[in-house]
Length: 222
Image (cartoon, rainbow, N blue to C red):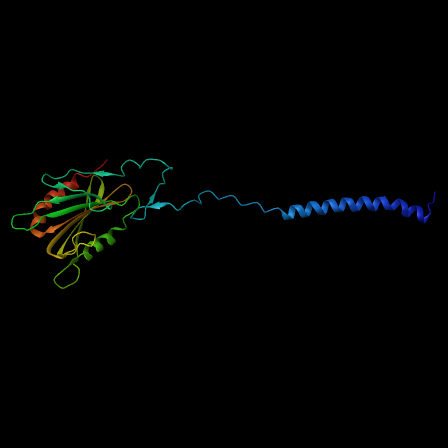
């Protein structure tokens, strides 16, 4: 059966209305999705704070928050008889001792122990150079230190000695002191180096050199 043109037009109207409604709904859904913020990428594993390194550039394992320092991080030693323990004059010093003056010397010596924390303290050569910069030789320059390597309890130790006019640059008495002998030993720790530095009149320090060596020989992990 044939339909007239007007009847066909009336039949097509509901179809176009339905198609327009479906198309409008799809467009609104697409617009809504396009306005939503893009998902944030999840952090890649291992992208936290950079790992700690010790003063020789070796990686130091990170401890969980609130965890105690790893065993072996601290060192202990035996103090020679006659050495007098003093309150450290700065927060950088782990310990400090007064050494009795030798006969004929106007003053005694001092020994300080420095530990700056895990991965801290700088490299060995930088510290030796800093010690040398505190001394002036007869030419007005800085002395060339004598350095020897040994070991104590499986730990590497560097023995350092030099002499000249000493100027304390770490606070306190900064009066230049001619004829000073500096004896230093740098001991490898579990997480950083420990720096033992003794200064005083040459005769006094020579009288305590063997005692200083005995102190270093007694170093152990606590």
